Amino acid sequence: MKFGKKSLSLLLCLLVLTCSIPLASAETNGSGVPFCLCDTVAGWSRSSGAFTSDGEVYTEAPASLRYETDATQFDIFVVQYLASTPVDATGTTYFEMDLYLENADLLSLGRGQFELTSSGECDVEELAFDMGYLARMNLQEGWNHLRLPLSAGSLNSLTDQQFDLSQVNYLRFYLSGLPTSAGEIMLRFDNMFFTD
Image (cartoon, rainbow, N blue to C red; front, side, top):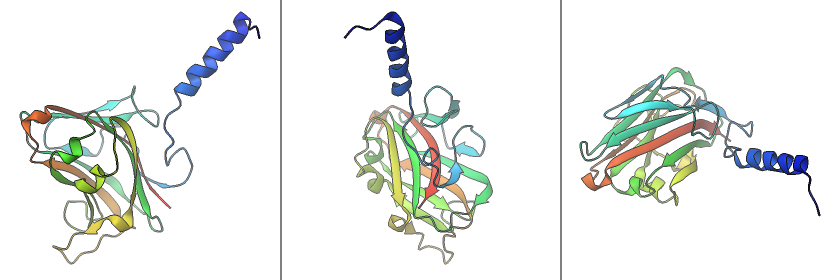
């Protein structure tokens, strides 16, 4: 079969477009309650390192949130997000997000948690996932789509206050006890949603 120059150009364009389609996500499939799209640094804080909005590497346009720190200087990192308005995720059963790892073993190098709260702070009205739970999800270098069943999270037993799914407004992701051999650390976050 012979192809002309126009046919080959069209085929090449289609191939480039197909290869640049982002990962499937809660936002693109139309189901879900957005928590944080991670397009800007607004609402985010950290214990060390720096955040940037990355408009070149993301799963859902226009950007992802890039975080960098250095384990040779800090053996812990904490990233936090405080929503300007609480999110009502009543009736949902999963929390989904896209996480980019430069080192697939990072989450098993220290101790930590991924937490959601309805109090606007850590450890109060909290639902937490141990990093060991996340590390067992067969994560790989590059983008990973995490689908966390809310039923798998543990409630903070130190307080009497319960996590309120109708008022979710805070997220914390931290690792402590990192060896200096972990070196420079880079993560990206994108597309955080509650889904059915």
